[in-house]
Length: 162
Image 1 (cartoon, one colour):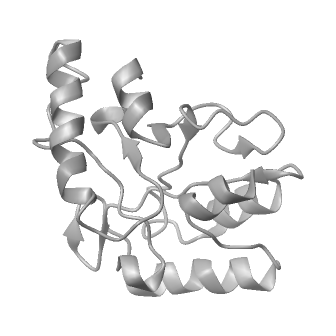
Image 2 (tube, one colour; image 1 turned 60 degrees about the vertical axis):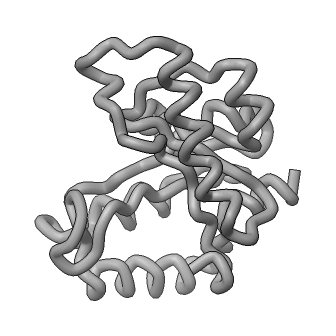
């Protein structure tokens, strides 16, 4: 996947429950660094991290080893190129792609402010993984994005642009 232009991001080594169970800062750093060992075996230019359950602390060690951190959902769900903090990237996991079609997703994309970018959170496809989308829904979304003349890129490409 990496050779086809996808960034493979770190998501910790054992995916600890950081939302409902307290883990130490040291344990979280170890989880991130152990995961990064595997990610570094992939030929990539930049390394990104997404905390499980969208909770975690960006420590000096994490900043020293990762180029960006995705913290998860927030309001707004988009990122601004004007006020960019690579250690507070917001992402969006539209859970209704399969249930309600793509109307809400398309409406959100149409209403994004200028100079903004959006990170989609996709955890599975065609019945595999957590809240999987169907291949048809993903293709529909990609076709829509192309029709809107919106650029598609990965985290490394965004980092290289700034």
